[in-house]
Length: 555
Image (cartoon, rainbow, N blue to C red; front, top):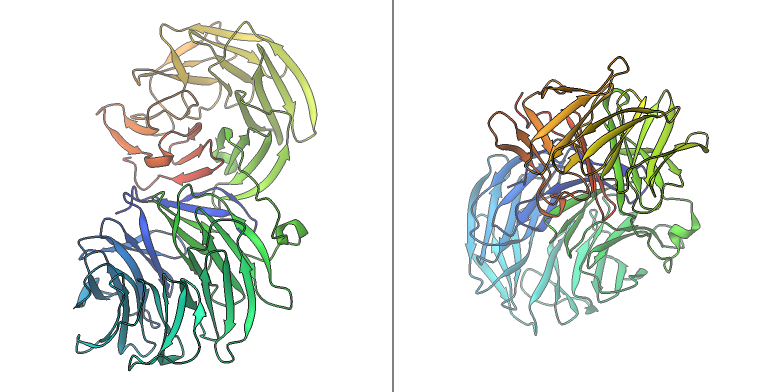
């Protein structure tokens, strides 16, 4: 069910509320559920994928639904999973074996929400047929139908510490409380959705732009939360009950609800379509119609007062203009349109350093760590500018005869800078600005995003063929070399430059077929680099992804 099983997809700063991993699917995920180190993803295709909550790796796929899986929930002990959706069936699954224990049939249209009681004796299901059905788990029969609703049911939720107490929320903005006889108990609240905290001491109801947290025993209001635009689609508590997350359209928010001053601590931007579900595990996980789920960094609250200001404008990600990959240092480096250079730890995906540089705008550029110095090189107006970002010093500029660059690269040994025109590659010394060689090309080409060592550079032509040249110091002129690279001589990385229109893929040069391809919104990055194991890509929507492909590529 996954678009492509990958070990790591990440690239996020070590700050609260930033995206630390993204997983893409073949069809968009509708529902999420979490319990005991695993979480389940219900897909529009009808499949349910079980993933490891820490690594995001796939454990198994549950097949049985024939249509959209709109709702999921685990039993408190993690033994059972309950699901429902557009095929009108409620299913009870054995998580360990992946088999269906029972089907519960009776709803006449979409099953929109399911919940299982803490003693695992009762399942509640809500539907667009404007009813709630209560089912005996052992017998498999429906023993109660609650049909006192004016609109469809959005959510049903058992109290985690009371198997006889159930809450519901319907689309007419009504939250009600029920016993297992189908009798309404307690007051009525406003909301189109409702959920309990893990320990059952609090519940949250939400609708439009207001979400209200209440004490489950006293029903006293703990706090009211507000989103700046659109309306709440879903909300959830963190496992410790200290935080509440809520989504509105494609943005999620996290509030600290402890203390006397509950406040917003993070605004999560990254999805490009509506968020369909939120859950908290060790991090916040969001599912979206953009066919991805995202893991958001969870940690101590930030001290920056601006982060707690409800009216503050969320930062807009700046397009990534370049990426580089240095496996020997275990880092990737990105540069965005605003000139911010970030150094990422390949193994953790966390940002180690962020530096503001003058390399701004839509300029061709490259950045590398050379002898402990962060060197930034960018092309503008027939000149190459070289900057020591570590010291904050402009070094010098190189005048070039290239009127329109199609790419720029620093050599793997840090001695040269390459610049590509439509019909030539030219090289200059990065330290003196002296010309170091030139190669005429017979066809329009692009700098291959594959990282090369020493003084080598390769280009990718429009027909996906690649050629490489060695501009070594001892060579009177560049020498063309065969397709040998990084221990996998039969694999080429195609695409991954700003003007390349095809998908970014790794191709088997011998067989002529693709062995890995980025798809969906990730298909055409602005920039990409590959070292035979890690692929780092940067996008116009401001995201950096680092993928460990070592276990999916042929050796």
